[in-house]
Length: 564
Image (cartoon, rainbow, N blue to C red):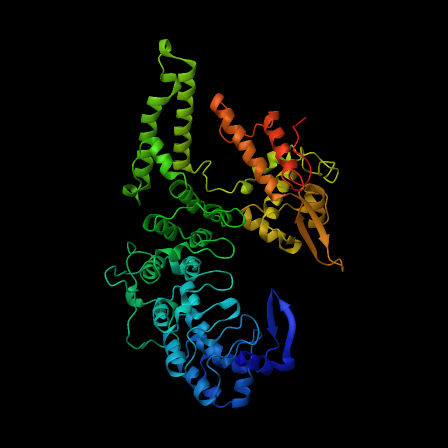
């Protein structure tokens, strides 16, 4: 826009081309003005030349008006716009290109939002980088009064997703946990958010986030969390389908809620809107997988026992009609499942067949029926072998598969020092393989430690020195050469790790082995999920498919072979 071009021109030669952590930076100008705007020091600002006030920038390209708006200094905002003449829609000269209204909305500064929009004519639909709007930021921070105010003033654009496909419901699902868990009074009859009204905001300019959320709306511990109140409010205005929106990564709000650890919102989506964790993202991850990525085992367990695609069929197998009557009472629910399983076991267990009437066919059918009931019970109580689990996220299964891949000479030939039988090296190899299968463009070596810790928390990446390696790159090359390759840029300063495995073939190998395991379980006492690599049949089936479907070959271009 002309305004943003003018802002860039104003920065002139002082704008640097340096990028730090992916953000454009500016050379700061007049930091004393920025500090005064941040502190709300109107007297100092009045004593400063208008030219200097207009020229002041911090390193992210934020003006004095950005800081005053974000901190909630209404008087300073009026002065900078009316007396100094700053554009109320001015964008940051660098960073995320946000307008002052973005910061006011994000921080819950209702009075400043009213001044900018109603008095100064700021655009309520202002878009920052990637199409982010003030309404989205208010939703992300659950700033309820600001959200309701802007909702009535923004156009239909407020329902549109940003450049990453994230709708307003995705932003709510990413809310900070400390705000999401605030307890509020929710008026289910009027569908109004706590603290919302049309009266002027008489709070002090430095009103806290708690006041911005509506001090009068704070409820008892038995009241619903703030995030649920906002979710109900959005259902009334956007409809139920808004919570089924899919972004550019294949994430629905349920994925974001699980990743953020919002158990209450996940429960609400499943019980209130009848959502299921039945859709994987574009990396093959279900919401339960993302919950485990951030260490929220409780969220993953709920999703795999209450929201898996197989829940209805599993309940039917046990003879349980409904789960809704046990909502919120996990102990009663588990007791009912246990009782139902015992009833089914007494009826179907093969040992209950009378010896004089036992027939091989009847015994076989009984074993299969009992196995189905047992598997259903295990899925409903512990999430074991649930359908909403990415098989590529299971390093144990992947390690077992890799153990039967022909070595093409690129893998390490010796056991790393200090690793005994090589178990630690194989563990690292399998976990690295899982990470890289989700990085089709490769992963910068500098990000590997962070990604490894995030995916396998609380486990950390092994110390290269324990394996006789001087660097992380050497560790990868020595212990994981079968699954990864390290590439350097022309200057030999930046390294990127790429997967050697073909994702489609890994999927096929795992699924074929699961099919073989299921068949084996039906005719023997082998456990469901065991990979029968001692059987040539699934290996032959996989190799035939791998060579006929046009891919580069099984796993990384070589066939899966039977273990010696």
